[in-house]
Length: 367
Image 1 (cartoon, one colour):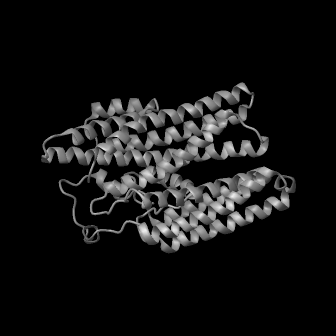
Image 2: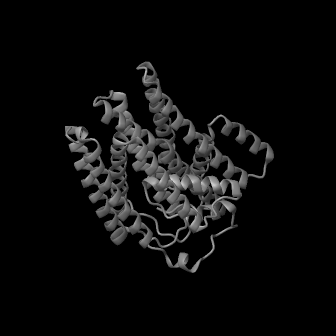
Image 3: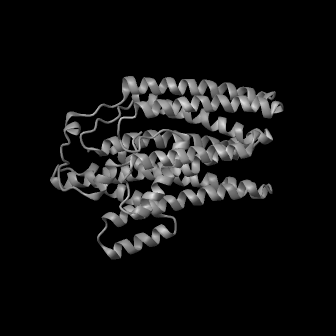
């Protein structure tokens, strides 16, 4: 496990990007209420609150699993009740990251601090993934839907689209890099072409899919609701079949499977760290069929929409994005996917005492 000064700087910058993201969403919600678009404002607030609550629940549960000091756990709970637990996570990551990167002596103690810093950074990346798919993705869908329905939106809403796209792209690649860094014996993702290819794969496939489901929402809202429900149930059933064991309690495991089922609506993740050549092929084969079906439905149910310049541009972009995304996916997994080291294959133990936190990381969803 390595924690560099670059990791320390990026973790510190993460606080400001988090605050900026939340600030833009709140600003947009206020603008909606000022424009008397109360439904859009309430939906924006709803996505923010739901994402924040889920993040607090998992963050506090992880603290509870490893923290033995009841007094410290009490104030941690209070902070989480005020939806600010993410800042405690950042504090731990920055505290131990500072000690690990600026320490002059390479002692066992500094190695332990570096390990704690990496684990804290990995926990943060997992929580950001939850926030991304519970808040940023729905926000992006909402903003593109408004653009489709009204044709014109404000600069603030364009900023929201840009922030959401950036947040989604960054959180996915950051999660991939942090997770592989935290797992002993696992080869990390190289910065450069492998990272760029992975970002392009996620960015293009997500963009294509989000625009497609906005098309469906514009045409037939009830079909949109049915499709989202069917895909969520399919993702949830997949987690049941995989028998995930991520959480320490059955109640939290149920919530975890519900969240993962929702994430699987939008992108593929390996929920058990097993070989997924066949599942991922099926997943994106279904994605191609679904996107094609949605475009056909648009021409059938809402021909006036299909005659607009905006639909023409977005539909072409959807098809091209899906194609480029699948090409990037194939290129990444064929040429750049990190291979497992011999130590990981043989199952070597981590240096030092084992802990529940390390075993939890081994059960994180794999990109």
